[in-house]
Length: 320
Ligand SMILES: [Zn+2]
Ligand SMILES: [Zn+2]
Image (cartoon, rainbow, N blue to C red):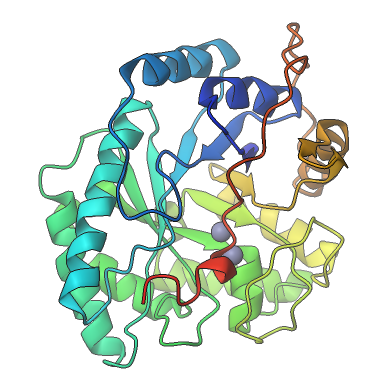
């Protein structure tokens, strides 16, 4: 099991990997396109090379990329659908250029056309996205809290998409977000509930097809269909449940990514010491020690927190 967090990158993505390592990560997640823009900016070969070098230097693996929020492959509207296909394609390309092995995306909403129409649209969109996609990158469908026509709240919906694309089996999987599971009504707050939820996921999707977990707490009620992330132990999901979830043998090879708010020591300055302590608590839930501290101090230059964290609630209604 590898463990890390979503890192703000500002204009220095390579630096973000060094900080990820310093706060106790051996994996990390980043954006490689503006999460709120329909267009990926032009590739930056020098920055990409620096990022790949930092990956090797820090031993951070895997690097997970989170795609932009605007993407909605399930949209019945042609303009959104086409733009989503293009942007997800571009994201896979940028991920490959950064040496990232996984791309997570929100599978979107049918916005009224119905679940089966949404799933059909999404499946067709993925076929187009994966046509000629870079070899080394795997695309992961993220589960959702549901509500608003969103289709990723049920394991059956995620499995339906995977089942219709057997030719892309090696390039498609699922990312489960604990706050989204909770919002969708899966009670993962007790060990029994967590184990039952993962048993269901294993039966319907297969945990071997879930290489990434987003580990988030939430202040929102079970089954609320709301998506807000909290630091582990600071929301309402009991940590006993999260610990049982993380210790499930089916997730032994998974990568765990925190998408939790980062405290600030001053406005605009992330408090990485606090975040390292949070990482240590989160890793302990999974029974993981902190990795050995790196020898080089790279925190001298503070990282601007210019790019927000992936909270899908912020994206609601963003695209349409
Ligand atoms: Zn997530
Ligand atoms: Zn979320």
